[in-house]
Image 1 (cartoon, rainbow, N blue to C red):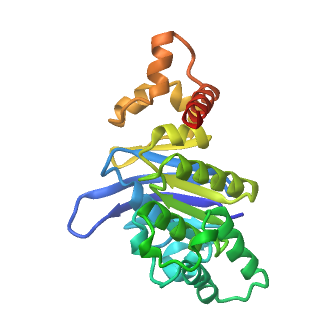
Image 2 (tube, rainbow, N blue to C red):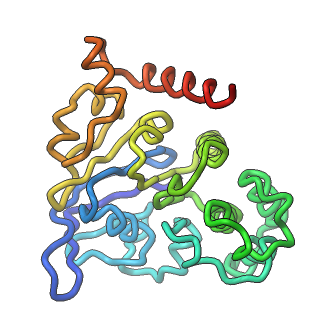
Length: 270
């Protein structure tokens, strides 16, 4: 497992003000972390610095012992898989199976279990019956899972998901929940960017809140729940569970979030 280390990282796009300033952060290998923040706080920029799509203006980003400045994005992709917010940005083949199987050409070193990885990715993402379909004939919610499967099949140590719940119904959200659980069992590092705070709090024990060109909070989700001022400072709406706890005078915990979500899921199934 590879740690992710940001050392005094700054980033600016050409001829624009700084997007990120003085980021110092360590993410241990195997952790599952959600990144939230208002639009324009640098969440996607932060993620692209991890997989080498962007390089710091100053400072260093380490993936294990790799300084990302010294490696191509293609090389880093073997260690850091990135599922884009728009799946159409990374789908190129005429069938779902060809799209997912393309990982065999991307991975340069031979892996004897590559066919097993491809099949497992198809099963994890619920795409068994869509193998022969053109991805662009599928709804965007399912195209997201095609993009995910193509990354999962490469079996990287670190996976980044950009807004995976966007446009997903109850089935898709439950499928995502199962994917994250399986990745946790595999001890993969997972970084998920999301505006879906309820989904984040239900499924991620650690949280990064971004605001003011930096990291406002990094720690246990439960600690963030018990500090509603963090959400106000980040210009984020309080999670519904915080509002409920405040009305009832109850302590707000992740256990309560999960219990409330289970009640909601049971209600949907009725």
